[in-house]
Each structure stands twice: as structure tokens, then as C-alpha cells.
Length: 109
Image (cartoon, rainbow, N blue to C red; front, side):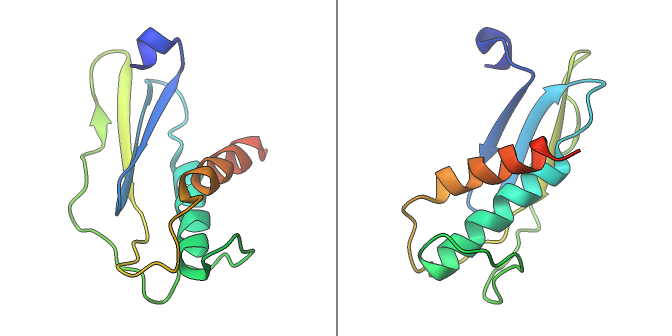
């Protein structure tokens, strides 16, 4: 997908983990994945955008997630657990909030 789109990274957010496939040699986007997940979990807990940056107390974390490592000579994968709420206050806007967290983290020096 990344090759066809001409991008250096593809990110997939599942309920309880986030995976990025990125070009080998590039800095793994771990902080961006964590930031996006944290902001989305905060919104899920509050039911609206929030400035709360602590994981929601009711969040759970998966033990099983995709493996990190090389996909081939050109691509690597990295996965992080995401805070998951079994009973979110709302789910509208979580994708937008996740992407905003990714962009925010990527824009920081």
C-alpha cells in the first residue's frame, strides 16, 4: 500500500494496538503511535476532545499484537499497545483524534 501510494509509512489502528510499516532506516514512529493512541483514548473516555494526557483508568492493554521487525529489505514494522476502553463514552471522532496525535507528535523536534 505504501509503495502504491508513494508514502514512507502506513499506519493501522486496531482496537488495542497500533501498527506502522515504515521504510527501513527511518526512525520508527513509536512516539507518534503512542501519542495518537493516548489522545484517542482520552476522547473515548470523555466523549469529546480533551486535554487529558493520562491513560484512562479503565483502559486495558493487549498482550498480543503484531510483531516488530523487518518486513523485507526496504520495510520494517513496529507495533505498540493502545489503551482500549470496553465501554467508551463515545466513538465519534476517534480516528480524527488519532491522526491529530500522529501529526502533532511528528511535528515536534
